[in-house]
Amino acid sequence: MPANTPRNYLDATRGYGAEINLCPDIRSAFAETARLQQEGRVLVHPFDDIFVAAGQGTVGLEILEDLPGVTRVYVSIGGGGFIGGVAAAIRMIKPQTTIIGVETRGADAMSQALAAGAPVELPAITSIARTLGAPKVSEFTFRMVRELVEEVIVVEDRAAAQALFFILERTKQLTEPASSCCLAAAELQREKLRKDDQVVIVLCGGNVSSEDLAGFHAHFMA
Amino acid sequence: MPANTPRNYLDATRGYGAEINLCPDIRSAFAETARLQQEGRVLVHPFDDIFVAAGQGTVGLEILEDLPGVTRVYVSIGGGGFIGGVAAAIRMIKPQTTIIGVETRGADAMSQALAAGAPVELPAITSIARTLGAPKVSEFTFRMVRELVEEVIVVEDRAAAQALFFILERTKQLTEPASSCCLAAAELQREKLRKDDQVVIVLCGGNVSSEDLAGFHAHFMA
Image 1 (cartoon, each protein chain N blue to C red):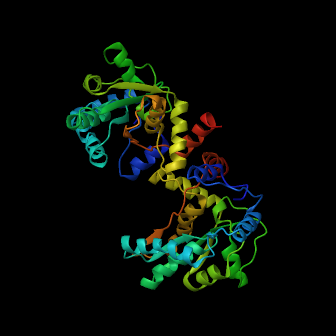
Image 2 (cartoon, rainbow over the protein chains, first blue to last red):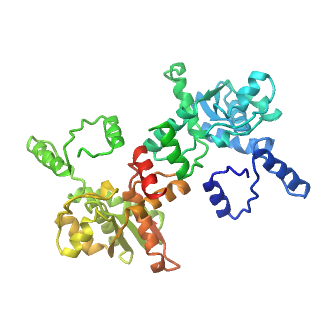
């Protein structure tokens, strides 16, 4: 894991029995996984793997089961595997469903790839949505998103943080900015929504430490 | 409602369509309810009502349904109606279950009543667990707790706040100090617990505003 991994990730991962190799940054962490692979370990890639995307796509099946009338789904994009799987599953069964991708400013590798026509490497991840911080999407996820996702929206950190606290107060559920940005995106599109739209916002994680939360409040809410 | 009611309570209550009369403090709020009763309104008392306690007791039935082997249940005490109902329901069906009441220092009207042998009026509520802040328990709830609850534990605000953030990080669930104090109490009793104990901690609310949360972090976690 990169050295800037939140303390609570480390605690929880160790709590499940894992041994963690901390690397200076995400690039060196990926290099370390390559080295471990050569030693015979199996890499479970966080996004650039068709089986991982297929597994994550079962979230799409659950959405269709719970809300067959769904018309619009907001999903955040880190490396793009999760949205690729969810979009593939939903549009296979209900092709008229609109899938919207969401990134935060400073962690927008997919938006920049779409603008450039190919994956580009971000010089640095500057968003609070650290788990969206893939420095570069893959050819595989780029193609999935270009084919299956209607548009990718970039929201500001402030909007993601405000959505986080709204969700926390009203639903008592802790999300991370990489999740809550989907609500912020839906709010940006409020005028686009039709009265009969059935909107799903996928809140895919809540890995925020108490310190992070206090910091978000001080920076964005005070 | 008393004037120190958290903003998010007011927002949520208004959001459900209520009209709120704000009074300077909880005593004047109760006086206002008495006045409204004389005008013909119906008072739904927060704790001093056998029907309210009976309704809240259904939480006890749910606990027995979900965990028939339960041996020990931690429930916080505001005015004492909730714990009274839960304890009555559980002990009617499974009398050997131990019910532990929990208060925070500065909102410990029931502990003080038990020590004095009768309900006593607290001069002020000084705990962060504002929803435990009944200034005085009633004869009805005092009797229920004395007969059905094994002991009432008082925990410090700091321990309640730390338990709140632990629950938030690990379960992604927002609780208020008036709930999380039950986990803090169970931790205090760690040595009392037997290996085969099946412990339930009732987390009965999460009415904490983002500002409160940031304040708790600054005071108790930093």
